[in-house]
Length: 267
Image (cartoon, rainbow, N blue to C red; front, top):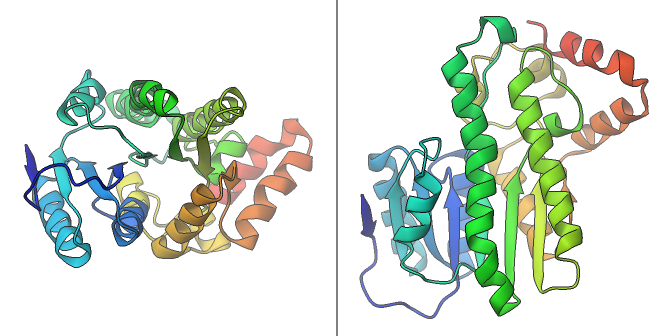
């Protein structure tokens, strides 16, 4: 389903595409983009939530909001999303959609793990590839990829999730170098534990990581990522403790890092 919450022809305003836009960091980023005058194409699975968010953002900020109910873990979903934009140039691409699961890899649902790879890695890669050529033609654009502090080390009990976020980090950093002489910026937002639906869906509300590091507000995380994107920063890690964690693990012997992470996550 694809509807406009605000009727009319193409407005001339810049267009931002945000995946996972109905809750948490994705919603807050959508709100900031609308506030600053971007038309939006917001994407998520829940059609009812999408319509409600589209009407709220359109009515509150006077921008056009297209809502697209789509499961980006489905094969071909990224191509379908790109086609629905009807050739309109994308000025800002926010790859935010993603999920994780908590528990030993051998005991997790294999279909959930494979869907996680398709959403967290394949959809992000495909959307970026589909969007980037037009940005290069115009020599202008911003890409914000939402990773996690999980990207900086292996993560026992969330092995696949940590690995997908490591891909997002390294893929984005490589693009920064490839696009260094252009007008296009790529920013990685790497938050720590954040007050969203993510941890409930992952089944990790009682994880020691949540208790030890504390939880940041989604609006604060989104604001930091948004400011970093506008400044063309390569990596944004909101919160002092979140910055110190990857630094400490990076300095530790590689052989002990997985056991340290596991102890942090044990229930």
